[in-house]
Structure formats: structure tokens, C-alpha cells
Length: 285
Ligand SMILES: [Mg+2]
Image (tube, rainbow, N blue to C red; front, side, top):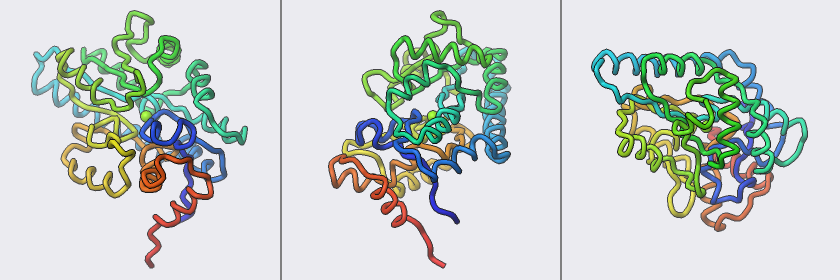
């Protein structure tokens, strides 16, 4: 297998505060990123995986509606970036600019409102609206009104439901006060709004279950995450629907977890990251 080829989230936001942030923020443009971006933009396999994920989600929704047709509080909770919205053009721009991405460039991207739809997503959410299943878009985009408004305008252009600003803002639960964990927002939907959530959709495991939230001393390492995935094996494809994202995510931050804990969140150079990645590689032959 070729070299690991992914971008990094870590440096852009300051290490520990950001290592579980899910929005796209590669810290460095390099040749390794190109393959991951093209996978999202050009691979038939990527598209098929997304369609497969939305088909699974629809099967779960139909099953719930068939079981209990009188339930009026059904809902679906979904992440946005790389689950509903495809931001790979921004990643491509960063690659072409050969520049370090900053949080500012991410904010500029949100305001542009030029993200595309993840395959199968518009049809799925329109179907939910038709079947009167509520939708909560829980994203770690910043919860300032300008970003919510721009995101809703972007989604309105792509024909997603509940995108009238400001009337539909209750469907958009963005990150407030740097609380990256989505658990309080999920609980708000369940406990305060009294919704019966059928499925959760996301490309990052923190979109789905609090088990993947970062601990007090930083991100979980890869082995911890793998064990937790195994412990939740009955949920995949049933309660939790996962989308592919080879460009960025906590799966990568997890590589550097030990280093970041040992060095109290010190910045990593690209060279250090490459060294850590190579150490993780299984090359037993
Ligand atoms: Mg995401």
C-alpha cells in the first residue's frame, strides 16, 4: 500500500483545543493530500459508499415508520460537513494555493456558500420532510448568525429542506463556545424537544456517540477508537450511519494523541507527523 496520504487538522486551530474539531481545516498542503481529495471528487467507490449510507438510513426510517405509523416525534440527527455538504473544492483550493490553511480561510469558505451536496443527501432529506420526520443538522461550524445564514443559503440552493432563514434556524445546532462535543446538542433534541431519533449520520465518530469525544487530556488514540467501534458493533448501519472521509477527521488526530499528551499540545511539524505515521504502519510480511 502506498504512503498514507492525508491532510492534517491539527496545527490550524491549536492542537488540543482542535483535535476533535470536525470541520475541514487541513494544516498543510502536500502531495499526500491530493489522492484523498481526488478520492472524494472522482472515485465511483466514494459515490457508491455515500449512496449506500443514505439507502441504509432510509431503510431504518421506513422500518421505524412501518412499526409505529402514529409516532409524530420521529427525527434524524445529521452532521453537515462531509456527510451532507461536500467541501472537497475548498481542500482542492488549499492544495493548489500550496498554503497553510487557517481558521480564517475556513470561515471565508463557509461564507462563500459553495459546498456541493454529498451524493444521495438531498433526496434523503427531502424524503424525510415528505414523511414528516424532523431533521436536526448538528455541525461544528461556528454558531454565529452569519455562518448559520450562509450555510442555510448554501443548502437552500442545493434544495435541502428547512433552509429558510431565519424561520428554520431551530433545525441548525452549530458549535457554541468551543464545545466540540455534540452530546449536549443531541440531548437537547432528545430530552428537551422530546424527539425520537431514528438514526444518526456522520463522517466523524464524534457525530454519532459520546464514546468518541475527546478525554480531558486530549484525543483518544487509534487503538482506543478501534476498541470502541467494536464495542458498538450492533449500532453500525442500524442506529449509526457512517460516511467516508479520507481527507480529514479525528481518525488522523488520533495518530498523534500520545505525542500531544506527552508534549502538552505542542505543535507538530510535518516531518514529525510523517515520522509518527510511519511508526504506526503495519508492514509485517
Ligand atoms: Mg463532518
